[in-house]
Amino acid sequence: VAVAALLPTSVTVTSMDSERRAARGEQGVLFPDSALGDAVPDEMDGYRGPAACKIVGVTYRQLDYWARTGLVVPTLRGAHGSGSQRLYSYTDLLVLTVVKRLLDTGVSLQNIRVAVDYLRGRGIHDMAAITLFSDGITVYECSTADEVVDLLRGGQGVFGIAIGATMREVTATIRAFPTERPPVRLRDTPARRPAVTPMSGGWGSQDQAAAIA
Image: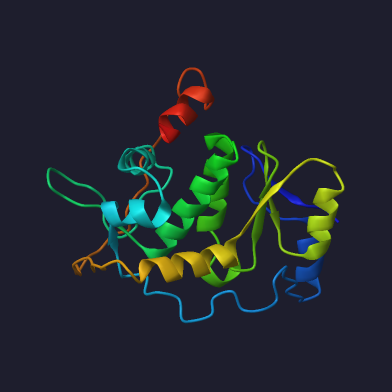
């Protein structure tokens, strides 16, 4: 059984076991019960920056830094000009929560960026079947019990984030916060993620220190 590792050079993240299951037309999930429970919150319901901070448990400085550097950019509305407010969707909040938990385990921003891109490329129902594991250096995706066992055989300590359970937590938490819907525009174009240029010293401690300050 091979476990997919989310590495900085990865373009697509799969596992050999997942590919074999796909060829046989099998789903194969770590948590077979529906992780979504109630209907997924409306993706057009937005949450302003201060609410997002409380929901995720981060400071506004962290949230602002992650948006400005392109780590997690709000999909509903960015900050444009004085007085404008960013507006985060349900999926944005889910990704922010995963980012915080990975940072708490000591994962570098370089690997977290790859994990974020990978999650963004999955549908909400696909994400519910994923568990992310990290040994503090690398992030792994597991979707079956066999993949988890294979990872644990390495003997290193790992930290797991069940995306389905995280979805339930975020869904329950946001109920206490007001929502705001962005205005509908006739010719709406998707928000583009700003380009990020690595610092001269790489994505190391300086980047991470700024993120968690």
